[in-house]
Amino acid sequence: MNVKTSIDLKQLKPGDSLTVTIERFNNKYLGETTLQGKAVVVPGSIPGETIRGEVVRNWKRRLLLKAVEIIDSSRDRATPQCKHFTHCAGCQFQHIDYQAQLKIKESRLRSYFDSDHPATPLPLRGIIGSPTPYRYRNSIKLHGPGEPGFWQVLGVDMMRNQECPICVESVDKALQQQREKQFQDFTSNGILNVLIRGTKLGEVYIGPENPQPDEIAWLNEELTHPLTGVSYQLIVPAHAFWQGSTPMLPTLVEQVVRPIQEFQPDTLIESYCGMGLFGIMSAPYAREVIGIEEHPLAIEAAKQNQENLDIENLRIFRSKTEDRLGDFLAELPSEKSSLIVDPPRSGLPKKVLKQILATPPQQLVYVSCSPESFARNLHALCRETYQLQDVVGLDLFPQTKHLECVGVLERRV
Image 1 (cartoon, helix red, strand yellow):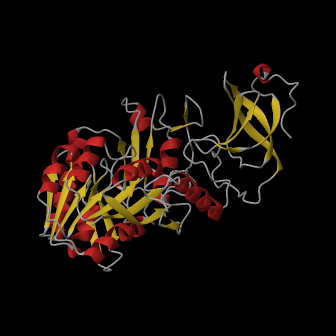
Image 2 (cartoon, rainbow, N blue to C red):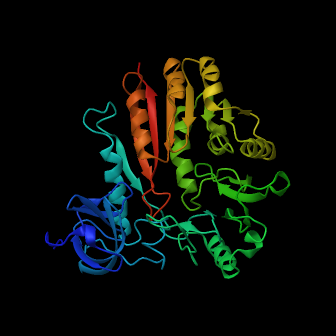
Image 3 (cartoon, rainbow, N blue to C red):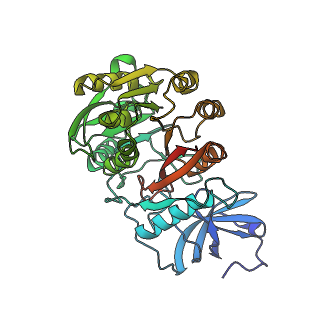
């Protein structure tokens, strides 16, 4: 049952006990209910559960509880594998059965496409789950002040995590070793932001998140093409973007490249191309591939991989997408043209949307790490110009709220 109305929530102090029934997930996917006009947040809870909690923080409009006893448990409850869960802000769902996590993520994706959205009815194939719900993440960033750590749930201080079981073993082991030394190799030199990244081949980088030019680290990575079975040896700069889920990377590549394989474009543009991953993997299926990227390390890696792999039909250009995409789109053939976009979490800027809509390629493959910005951009793209043919969710980051989406759009006749 919820707290009696006779109790004034404003008077509760850290350590006081409170029993609540969870009504919903909030926008951070933490269990929440509303009492006396105040949001009561309980990390590690599930809607419908009754929880006895201990007050951690009491703000003017929000109360944070630590679950002490699950009085009425959800049938979807699971046992977290990390001892820091509910304190560390990295994971939201370790207490939820994995199949239930996928249903939550599908519901979240659908919620952004109401009946008035031009892409509805949503042609969603579902959410592809990870083969390894733990031990998948290949990189972590730790931050100061003080000894580097992770953010706390609704906290202002950093947590000094002693483990991270969603990480691949090499990264987790490196974290544990550094924690035993309190990251003294870095803090003694004034370095408070540390990156740890591991590859499928077992190489591990531990160093400054923002290194000096002479400290740039290059790693060797291996990826088997999911459609051809060919093994690609790639170089990856530790400090540029690389997909963070090692076991789900081939699945992501397959979902992005298969539409290109089926369409066989004359010209393919990969915008926000990073190290050119999707362009490299799509090169067997397009006459010409153009990559656009502004990060200098990513560009260097893309060109080096192109040379090492002897991919003759790929050209890489260093530029901001909004500065160059329109020019390339204007030169595309009216038919048999494709565009892959993989923008930041904020989605495609209005300027880029205008360029796409001004000279739309025949096929558009949209890779998104934010269902919200994905739906917002599709509202503009599908209003008159495109038809959403297919969309699928990919759970690259189990135990967290995050969801990757791949949508395939075709220009209307």
